[in-house]
Length: 300
Ligand SMILES: NC(=O)c1ccc[n+]([C@@H]2O[C@H](COP(=O)([O-])OP(=O)(O)OC[C@H]3O[C@@H](n4cnc5c(N)ncnc54)[C@H](OP(=O)(O)O)[C@@H]3O)[C@@H](O)[C@H]2O)c1
Image (cartoon, rainbow, N blue to C red):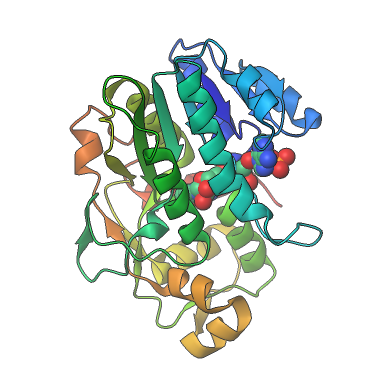
């Protein structure tokens, strides 16, 4: 089993869950300094760039399944085309090399931001409206699915909701609440679906054996939460001021149209398809999991 992006937020948790489940996990990391964190969860690091065909070929050799959660984000010093090349070209190269090497299955970590803003409950096959960062995940899905071949190379798409753990967007929310700068979108009455990091990782593990090729799986807990309730919950646990809302126009000027759209979208997801495979969240409600996480994160 190979995890591409094993040194990242999702990749490390997935590697750890695979090891716990008795799988032999190999983790592809771009930066040798991340090797130790992969080793610490019991997986074997392989240093290489997802955009380097020879490195990818070596990494997938003798694997039965590969999981792709490598991603790059815009930022200072990051070439503007890097996020697309890692997500889309990297996924294509991984699928191509994996299929050529006789790997049976590719599990692609995408995200639930590919779904359209939806007034009701989102299901796995609900309408899509990929924009900005989620356009890259959507294009990565298409790139991977283009290699699917029945009985030979299976491709399973995973669309996690907002994954909460000590890192990623959740760390950003905690830091900006502490700094007094966090504001929820508008009235804060739009729903997000969250999932605890270990539950998300367990979903990937479940899909290694049980996912159906060509299907997409929403990975969310049982109880969506509004952005106002979520940020208020975190603020209360941190002992800082209750946040207020930011008008949509102001939010758009601050973070751009696409990110503002995603933050303000209503996405209350259902996990029924994944539950049918035997997965269920150990932490079914962020109202329990989030305060527990904040307590465990300590004083910043
Ligand atoms: N975090 C969430 O809540 C969440 C929710 C739903 C979906 N997702 C999706 O899941 C994916 C991963 O997210 P994440 O939060 O785990 O991101 P992350 O923490 O940034 O992890 C991504 C990993 O990919 C590695 N990487 C980047 N370029 C690479 C390359 N060329 N070759 C090999 N490895 C490379 C990065 O290594 P370096 O740091 O060394 O560059 C990093 O370790 C993204 O597509 C994201 O949209 C995330």
